Amino acid sequence: MLNFTVGPVMSSDTVCAIGAEQVPYFRTPEFSQVMLENEGLIKKFAKAEKDARVCFLTGSGTASMEAAVINVFTNKDKVLVVDGGSFGHRFVEILEIYGIPHTVIKPEFGKGINSKQLEAFDGKGYTGFLVNLDETSVGVLYDIEIISDFCKRNNIFLVVDSISSFLCDPFNMEQLGVQMMITGSQKALACPPGISLIILSSMAIEKVYSNKPKTMYLDLKLALKNGERGQTPFTPAVGILRQINQRLKEIESAGGVEKEIERIGGLAQYFRKQIKDKNLPFEFISNSLPNAVTAISPTNGKSAYDIFTILKDEYKIWVCPNGGEFKDKIFRVGHIGALHENDYDILIEAMLDMKRRNLL
Ligand SMILES: *Cc1c(COP(=O)(O)O)cnc(C)c1O
Image (cartoon, rainbow, N blue to C red; front, side, top):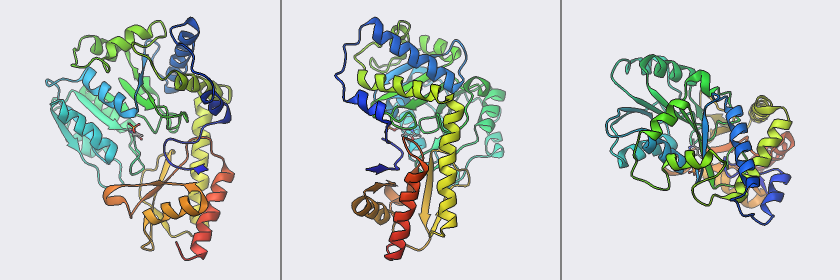
């Protein structure tokens, strides 16, 4: 299997090997040590402030999106939310479910947001901002500097879903004034799905302790309290947390987060150059490409979904299909997980073969 989707992605052999082991009991000093190490390295890689904390939730990324929203916002807030694709729309739905007042910013398809669009909301009493830094569904990376400036000058609490941008694109949580950053195990962390996490600034921690969300499992007060000793309130996905530990240490010993960003960015560049050099009938739909993924639209009328199906069934190569209205228009190629340049050579060769067969 050669997997170029955006998650779950391929894991290193050492991470896979942990997946084959028995799962240990976890209320032990040894497991606490693993968790505290995870917290330290995650904070380091996100460049979080010294007093920041990390909550690990057993649940996919959406669990942490929902937890973040309901632990810091109430019906007294006024939240701006960027809805540029299916993940942005998920934030909107969460706000709707909990009756949190909000205004939607809808970027043009495939485009980022500019400072002008945000200036329209200056001084209007907004208290929160929600954005998926990389809107993975359409492969658009928003300009976090513009968003950060806007939130700083308006004193707005900024929550960033970095689920597919953590370890992929440069990010400095403290400098940007991001109060909560979310990510998940199955994207660039390249582990099985099942764990998501939230980094909380000291301001976010204070806000969490002063809120009373109607939830038990997603109440971050419990996670914060237990986390002080490297534990979780409920049985976590112990095996995945051990795999995350292995992966974080591998990144650290290979040169840290900068090196990993460089590696993933290099793969993205390599792939995009091949597409152009080989004259494949594709165009990139985004004018602000993230490192994690390239969203591609066929220019010759062929169905994107058919391309996905043929690559999967006939070449054993997985790219990522889109759903809904984009099913036939877009497929995506990921650059995260245990991938190398020669893997892209195999993908490009398969695409060229499809072209020879008139399937592309
Ligand atoms: C993958 C992803 C999620 C999380 O989705 P889950 O299926 O719940 O893990 C959320 N936001 C973004 C931007 C993502 O890429």
